[in-house]
Image (tube, rainbow, N blue to C red):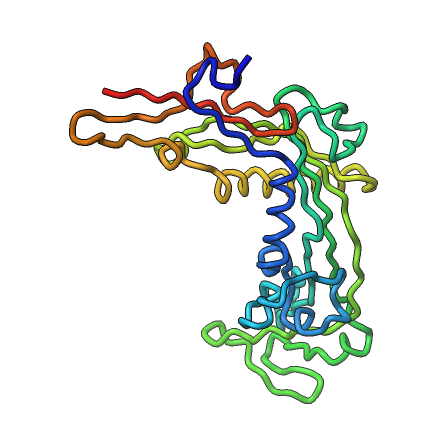
Length: 280
């Protein structure tokens, strides 16, 4: 059966092309995948993983890291204290049904189910741990406005105390994250869009279970909102109406179901789209 038996146009993208594009973007725009406080970003010895990037990044002065504010120490406000930290997405790949790129963990019930895609991320990060010597250097501002050691400060709400940034040795770790999802049409800002939906997520070898569940909840939220906010595609951008020599109009739109059973379809290692054309 021809691809256009039930439609007028057919388009598909293979998982190999998507993964090649992802690797290319990671090398061209490393700051989209690497985040750190300024001290870590400027010191390669503090990076949790080396960053592979093209010559254009340095030739054009593009950033390698997105600079973030220090991580606040909760409950410490006299003065506030922040710690160095970094988060790096070092690997990202996609696998379309039937699944031959990513080996899913048992928790996601492999093999990859019909009309599903899988994502695999490797996320590395770390927090700078200050030494006892650095901790002792932090002035303590008392209720009466005095401080130690050897400084005079006022705890005036109109003039907030500037935060103290503490250096420290970065303790790095890496997480292997697996996601299973599907594509769906969804109304976003009154527009019908093609977006990804998360069906399940798993982080490998995290204990205790409560910590694993909390991290999975955070990452599920991040992936879900990224798919909606950054990767949602308005169908109006793909399909259009256009006049033909002032005698008619050509309209391009998704082929209906039936006769096309899945549109878009995730199968044969590809994301497929079936398109109908009408002239009026």
